[in-house]
Image (cartoon, rainbow over all chains, first blue to last red; front, side):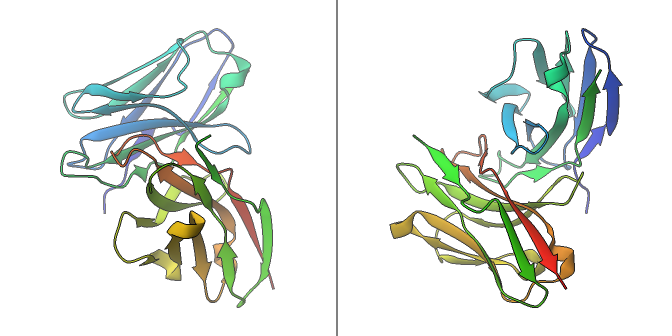
Length: 114
Length: 114
């Protein structure tokens, strides 16, 4: 079965640089979620989109922005990177429009800021 | 305050022995409940979920969980643990029952001894 695809899988950036993470949801899933997992931490919700509109917002820094495109893929844009942004970033998708659906997670993008 | 608590940070179980991982939640109403498993450096895999109805739910890999409203608990169980079950286990809730953000517990690391 098709799963959530995230790219890149690994990313190394320097402080103050920008990064773009991409997420391709499971086919026919209309909702995308972004989570951040620091080392040894539980995943923390950042933001979500349903039918290309922001549906929920969590602890996402103002330096970050995200959007969902017409093909339902999503991108997380991160600017002015800080050392503390080093984490595993997960994307999840669900079929919310068809009633509540559980979230399926991608393999994550490991971002290292040096 | 609303929270998800996994009281055990680390558990070691002998291969073939039974397993129970604890999860308690603190919300006004019964949220949607989930258990996810994460192997090192990997994404989160959904083990099972509870929305309503039968309080004993079956999941993948031989896992089951029981929802107890009176105890605000959703404990994960497996009758016979395999070495491949060693991983990090996260309990998560959707407090709004709306397919919105998941709130995760801090996780329980399971080690399996031979």
